[in-house]
Image 1 (cartoon, rainbow, N blue to C red):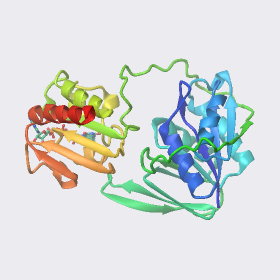
Image 2 (image 1 turned 90 degrees about the horizontal axis):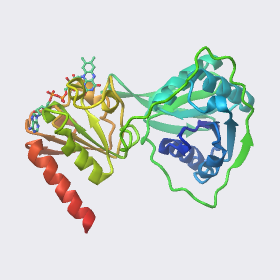
Image 3 (image 1 turned 180 degrees about the vertical axis):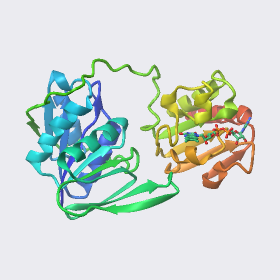
Image 4 (image 1 turned 135 degrees about the horizontal axis):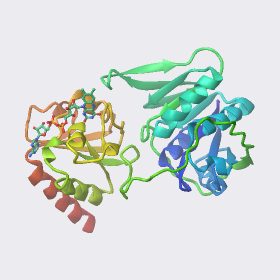
Length: 322
Ligand SMILES: Cc1cc2nc3c(=O)[nH]c(=O)nc-3n(C[C@H](O)[C@H](O)[C@H](O)COP(=O)(O)OP(=O)(O)OC[C@H]3O[C@@H](n4cnc5c(N)ncnc54)[C@H](O)[C@@H]3O)c2cc1C
């Protein structure tokens, strides 16, 4: 059994689903599961974390933690890790986790395995698997030596367990010593989209260059909305100005791991595959039967997206209505 500390992620008072994945996985493996919850006025969220099996939630609340700042968050969390001495520290492989965990690893002078897609607890140690060579292979990583083992885990990699309302975590305030950061976050501007972010959604519908215009992405949005999915895009579609960069999936975009990834008019270049090949089920719609995307797709529709996508949307609507 390990003492595990999970860095919770919340935005505007709402916890991210990926936090529940980590808490559920650590707790289900029988570990002593601690959670660090940082922010301003976020203490009430501890109860929800408890329902996923956390033993103790360490709450650090301060106006200085209202907006995420890598320096202040890393300072506070490093103090917590030093005082708690966990065997393992986990965060989600989100933009926040990617920024935060290397800072903590550096401050503690310990190792970090990032972007892991599997996690096994072995006593007080962990074994993780992470993609290498743009996802063409995966490497198993073990930690050597002493000190906490740090890892970031890709969202949707572990799956979210069911909350149990009868489970409660002990809540402990943690004193904030934010230090003297060299930078200050003054504002965070939210994207306009009401759809889920590609990195967190259980379903992602992505469009490529074949869409030909930003307007034509409406049919991708329609399919995404009927499925409750996020909208993604290839770099070619982003470079052409059809979608904002925040939707880009791939090596120089976001890495996604949804239960279902639907690639519409995307060829499947290696750099795109690097961002989505760990999706559980991949569906490709492409008129070229030789398109590389078919090499990794579980299901393929060889045809014109301008016919196939609206037809799929109609069929899903019918299924939902009945
Ligand atoms: C350093 C570097 C980093 C990169 N990073 C990324 C990245 O993060 N993400 C990314 O996506 N790419 C990235 N790329 C670009 C990548 O190499 C490809 O150029 C890009 O993914 C191609 O996008 P696409 O599949 O939309 O376009 P294309 O390769 O042009 O493919 C379009 C596909 O649509 C099909 N098609 C056309 N019309 C229709 C139709 N009517 N119906 C059905 N199918 C149709 C075609 O058969 C074709 O397969 C990167 C490249 C480099 C060099």
